[in-house]
Length: 159
Image (cartoon, rainbow, N blue to C red; front, side, top):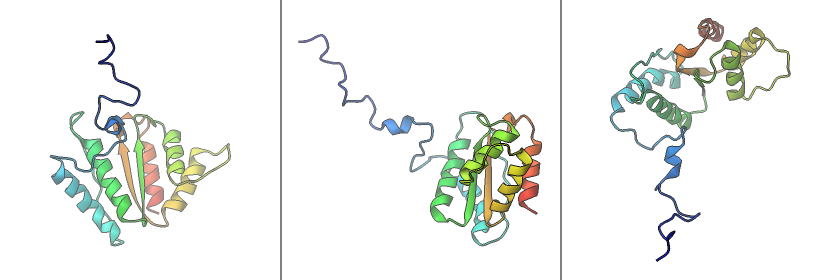
């Protein structure tokens, strides 16, 4: 009996599904959040029929599944249609107006040269987003240093 017989080999793992440990992993079923997911889908559903959806503010204690449930609904929406822009921003990582605008540009595949102001980028974003419906999700929105960006962005998109 060797001292290292019980050591995992390179091809072995302690985990059945290591992908489940990835922070971006979304399981195929999210238990105990069905009602919340249905409510979110009901608020978004009118967009599929070219009507206005409802605004949602999701609050609650940390770790109860707000982000996961929201990302699950957005993933389902993305699989359902190409007629809606889905803008998901993690405000814990992007907490300034400029970082948020850069993230949105990246999500929209808008490439730009340097020396663009936040206002210039907002105008371009608005022109892109106004071509079809949009769902904004600002996760950890309380981390934004200046919430005026939300007002400006939504105002520009709705013009």
